[in-house]
Length: 320
Image (cartoon, rainbow, N blue to C red; front, side):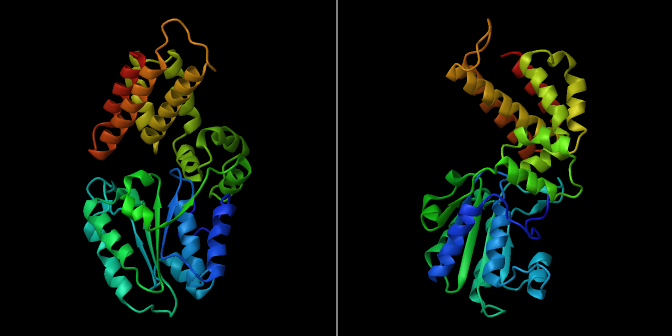
């Protein structure tokens, strides 16, 4: 997917974008914004579009626009989880040391004479120290400065942080907007790939990109076999190898598996799917879903053996 910093179009979020523009037109711009919505929905892209508007950098090819793209604009500071160099993946948390540069940044006069903008991407990952540091800034907001926080899980933020932000909720994209976003990918997916991915992406372009990278169509067929019992723990080692040898295969497999369990649970609870003899009660399926979410999170958080996690998932699904 295009880097949010360099993305030239914001598709599918017209209502939220117009709300932001309408506030700008009033001249009473709130000092803090909280962008919420499912993971991969485009929150970071919108945050950078907001920053570009405030910094006069809407033209990507202008000198100021190129500075935003390159990450060299003196009045834009971006905070996110750093990389764990040993594990080659994002760290578990945004820590106090990550937040500390914000205070120094906001004490300076704007280098280009306008707004100073801070983006905190993935604010739900802030630990307690980082959250308290952000809260202190929100309690005493400097003039001509805007904080933009993005989160997929607003409930993880301190209520006092949420209450000091103007919330913009982003909704899943419709199929037309999703097709337009995917058409901007390089390389552009084939039409048949897009058609197969759309039902699995749930209106989230970032998820669609991960699904494409992880060969989601093949993994979706594998998950369907796991759920209907035609693929089980007997062939677990072959399945685990198929999953983990693919780029993003582990995360895509667990995304699809949790979706399948959730769909089965919902349909059975609503009576939309007729139960068969021996089918688990929806409550047991709900517990299985929680188990799969926890297994994935612990495996990624503690860098555990992914093949073993897949084997464990297959055994628990087949044993339900």
